Amino acid sequence: MRPAANPVFSDARLAEIKSLVERYPAAQSALLPVLHMAQEDFGYLSMPVQQLVADTLGVRLMAVREVVTFYTMFREKPCGTYLMEVCTNAGCMLNGANELVAHMCDKLGIKVGETTPDGMFTVTEVECAGACAGAPVVQINNAYHEKVDAAHIDAFIDKARSKGGAA
Image (cartoon, rainbow, N blue to C red):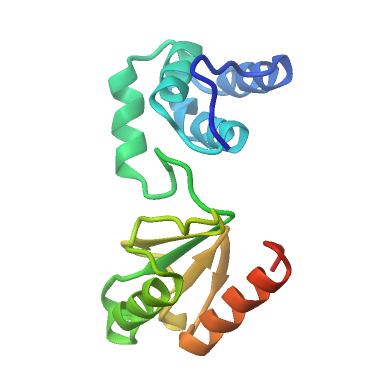
């Protein structure tokens, strides 16, 4: 999904944002949920989308940039149909996350942060998935998968490819 050069929120989304902002003492307090809405609507947070969020909330673009660049859940470029986020923090790393990332990238023929040419898979590393007991953890499109190994990933990728993107 590629946002337009001049993205706009729908009237329904603007009403939702207005209602949300009214719950807070300052519009900037609604920044996180509005960024989630924007990413849902436009696929990722391009600079024009970030400017739209800033203008909609009446905040400086830098305030939006500070949040977007801090949190790994926000994307500034398009990603594949399946966003595969591997936790590489200490617990997961000690349980094979680094080897898992290498395996995923090798199987898909991409590097961390890249998307496969068919647009199906993007592999990223995240600092902490908050599920250390299930290490290594891979979040695929917001669904957690714990104690993941190469066989689990291979099966997921093969199933997604055989169904044309619907795993």
